[in-house]
Image (cartoon, rainbow, N blue to C red):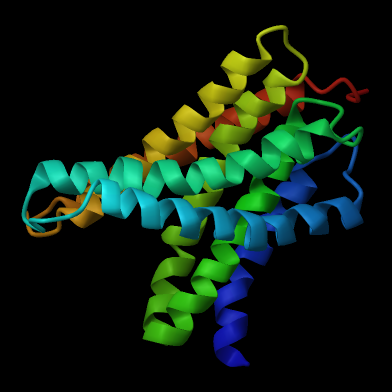
Amino acid sequence: MDLLLLAVSPAIIIIFYIYFKDKFEKEPIPFLVKNFFLGATVSVLITLVFSSFASKLIPLVDELSVFEQFLKAFIVVALVEEFSKYVVLRYYSQKSKEYNEPFDGIVYAVMVSMGFAALENVLYVFQYGISTGITRAFTAVPAHATFAILMGFFMGKAKFSKNRFVFNLMGLFCATLFHGAYDFFLFINFIPGMWLGAIFSLIIGFFLSRKAIKKHQNGSVFKV
C-alpha cells in the first residue's frame, strides 16, 4: 500500500495543481477522470504496440552508440509515448463540448499524461523500490507533466484556430522534442556529466510550461 501511494501521489499532486490553475471555468470531474483512465489504458496500450514495432525497426545494436541512443530516445520512446497521448487528446478530449477554451488543452493533456505516468510509475516503483519512487517523484513524473503542458498549449490553440492541423502537430512535436532531449541525455550516461543535459532540458521545459499556463490563463474567454 505504501509503495502504491508513493507511486501515484506525484501524479495526483500535479493533477490538483493544474486543476486549481484552471481559475475561471473548472472542467467536470467525471470527464477529467475519464481522460486520466484513458491515459492509463489506451495510451499505454498504444505505446506497447508501437514501441514493440519501433524497437524492431530501429534496434539498439550498440549501447555505446550516441546516434543509436539518439534514435531510441527521440523515436522509440519519446515519439511513441507522446503520440499515444496525442491520439487520446485529439480524438477524444478535443472533440468534447467541455473543451471550450484554450486552457482546456493543458488541463486534459495533463490528465491523460498523468494517467500514463501514474501507471508507468507504479510498475517502476514495484519493480525497483522506494528509492526509485522518490527519485521519479521529482524527475520523471514532473517531466511527463511538462511535456503534457507544452503539448496542451498548442492543442488548446488548435481547436479555436483555422490552423488546427498545424497547431496539433506543433503540440506533438514540442512534447516529443523535450521528451526526447530529456531521455537522450539520460541514455548516454556512459559519457560523464551528460545527465546534466536532462536536468537542463527539464528546467527549460518548466520555464516554458509556466509561461504557457499564464498565457492561456490571461487569454481565457471566461476571465472576468
